[in-house]
Image 1 (cartoon, protein in one colour):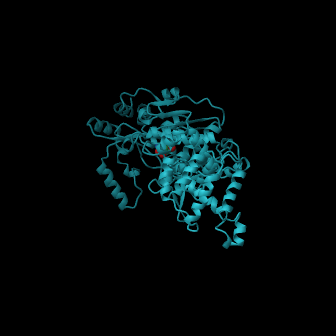
Image 2 (cartoon, helix red, strand yellow; image 1 turned 30 degrees about the vertical axis):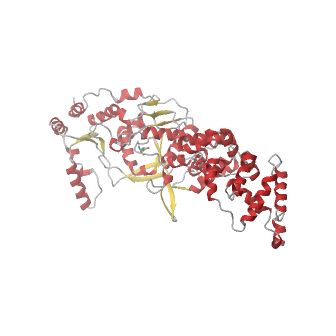
Image 3 (cartoon, helix red, strand yellow; image 1 turned 45 degrees about the horizontal axis):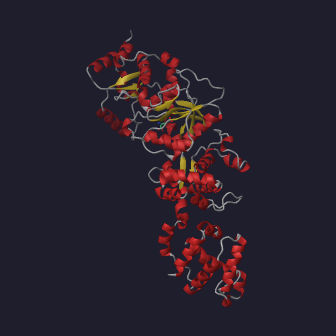
Length: 552
Ligand code: GLU
């Protein structure tokens, strides 16, 4: 038995499986030629970032359109940074946006697929098999450096203006003999395990990124920690093992991982495993006072996916937007195929932007307005109800009191070729429709002020005449004619043109009468079609509202 094997056995006596065993347990996937296996690998450290939704949507899309597999893996090896419950909420938010995996982590204690476990903390033994192999082959070694020694090293590097890290002559423990290491372990010294890098920072490594093309970067020379004293691997090493045994073909991840590529390439090469194709996705940027900067969790509400959910932006509108920033030819395709399912469009890596995708909230809002405008009344009411259940008890109360009434209100001028586009998000509904409900109307009416050009005598006259005659059984045209008659009888011109010709002769024109009625009934200077509004409220309620103003 070699001393390296003795060292490996001393560290991992319980590990008897070999790499071959793992290869058998996780065989090649049986997929058609060209099918991509992609993944989203979030860490449960907080909320779902808009950039992560973008990345996961993109990964899924590439897998689905190629007949492959998209899976989710929870990367929880940094347990200090873990935020309780965030794994579950990530999954439920992804689901809301339709980013559902074929395989993998589905929330606490839930997963599907034959390549698991899909939570890294449950894979400790798998990592150990590979680390044991590396120790046996002198590709890794225990490192006993204390935090104090490491910080001294850092100070020296700082003073010498050298690269930071554990490399070359700084990699002190890399020169320990296995015998020395065995002795120190037996003496109870604590240690981590490091990868023995054979790279040289002065050499270049060539990499083909599916989005960025051919690039050259400095070779890795860092002896990175692969196994921590808490028994878990580090991210870089877990990526090697997981994406190998899960047979990931394409690693689509944020471009913030680019600098780590030389490490990953060296790890794959050292194991003689084929590295996946890397596709580093553009980071989502924001225009801030004319300058481009990354969408920031601290500064930008729209950096958190929860913002869009809470505000009630329609999922389809938001996803439509993400498609437009994913591929530069998507919008042109959409113009030619306005009603097609967005997934008929195929993403390509070539059409992804290289220098950051600019996030444009105004465009999201426009697309969402379009989507909401084109929903039919049933779809809209259902989607609004689903949203209200989660985010607005106040709106939900109104809906549940009388769902049919709510549908009538949000159905105004819908299902037409050019529908009204009142709402850009579900949170717009309540403020816009409150006036239909008496409990709100009766409070808000206290604040009502009519425009200054209309005297209270004029208003009284119009309202008292109108309330005597108005008839909501009439057709819209006749209803309007009736309002006009009231206007004329009260001394208003029949139209604006006539009024302009001889302002002295009139109190105003029929538009002013409509404005008085609109304000009285809806408390708003602008409202949807007044005839329909009155019909929905009903004769009795319109009468009550008019009389209420008259008594003031
Ligand atoms: N867990 C890493 C993250 O949180 C994933 C990086 C990768 O996709 O390789 O971003």
